[in-house]
Amino acid sequence: MVPNACSSCHVDIIDFEKHTKRIYIPAKVDCTPCHQKEAEEYLGSVHHTKSHFDCIACHSDIHYLGKWDRSKVAIINKCTSCHRIEDYVESGHDKAIP
Image (cartoon, rainbow, N blue to C red; front, top):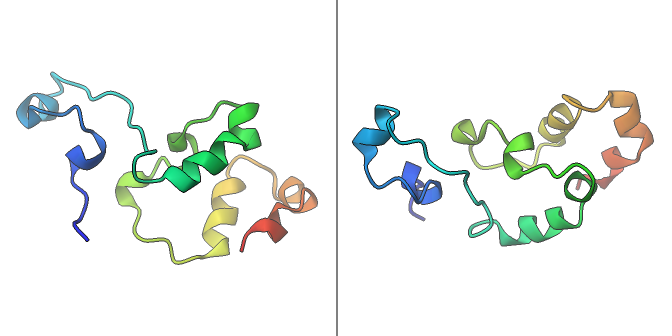
């Protein structure tokens, strides 16, 4: 597997020097080409249908993420950064995480 580079996601960066000098700011990234399954699930979720979040709303730290270790703690910490822990548990979401 080839590691990602900036232009793996920011496909519109064609002049790296202009980008690093902030002359050119890349367009919003589309995560769908690599994350089709997740994108399909997201389109049916309440976060999309009611709130119109995009991927970056929850995954803002994407530049620092590694491969997910399947940790429920990481998910709960992310969700409860916006949702009260009591509401999160009461809604049953804590049981939905594999």
